Image (cartoon, rainbow, N blue to C red; front, side):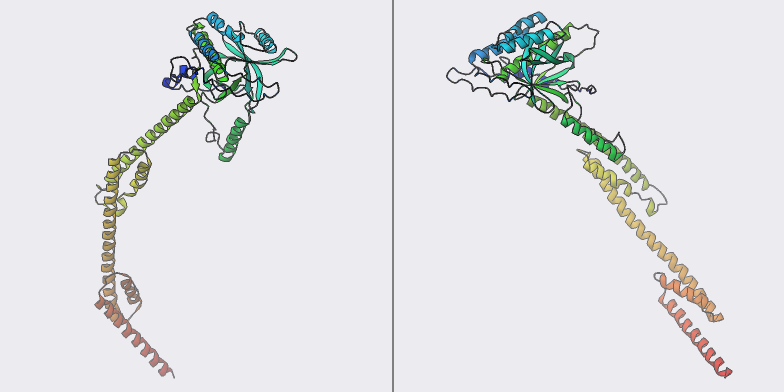
Length: 447
């Protein structure tokens, strides 16, 4: 069985329209009875059920049917005891069911192990493959049972019990009633299989279960089972009105069950009745709140990081003596980018950090240029001194080894005296010529 859902409570304001969802008189969204000369359109015939006989088509609702639906919902909603609720739900038995349906309802009500059975409803259960299955919903003071009844044999084939405390909310859909539960009701179905496959693939690809794709968040709307009313032949109520009665009965039964529990027992809240738009709005608001919280956390973290970077960068300006490598403007680059991406980050802080970064970059440029000029000056003076010494030594010793090295260094240095370089070049030419003449004289003497 599936693990229970950790339910996050929805805002109370989202459930205020429960009466509107059930079309209670005087509630917002209440539809007044149609005028006699303009009868409502006939309700659509439910699709054929899988694995059984298709529900009978619904008859066109009348004003009497609408009034009957409203009065029945009122009687259910105002019931203060289980006995009063059972008395109000006796009207369901008086609907124009076929003899087979009446026999099936009575059999299912007596078959379920929990008694007394308050009411039974013929429905089409939407299974995990989105197929309709004819079932009987039997409501008891603390649970409801989904019963499979074979009209041909008159036997109950199997049933599934759902405690009312496991029902989280009720949603009126366009076709019926969707019941949201704490755990999986029946098999998971292909949609959840695909989510599990995605999660498994992510675990294999990342090599870590912690970082794996977790699929859809398991909120109070994760596990669901939908039921569509199967109307009795010639019923004066529409499918929408039967859904109102079923939703009101489930909510009131859960409420009475909650009130009957001991005060020190595990508490639970009766399931609220929502419309599809209200459920979507709850999820939208919750997503927006989560996004706002993420933005707030990122904004605070980005601002804190940027403030720290500003402090570090400012401290680098106070160092004496200071070199270009100590001017730390780079520490501001990433924090400034992060703060720009953050939503509604402090604009004055970002502006101050950008100004500081620009000032530090300019200081760094000036410092680098000054250090370059200082290195050139030191090298020029050293090369000049070495070349002057080499010229003096070469003039005496007529040896070019030291002079050649000094001349090469002086050429690499910036701004060495041109007059000194010319003297060194002339001396080298003179010594080279002397050595050449001496070599020729030696060769001639040898002949």
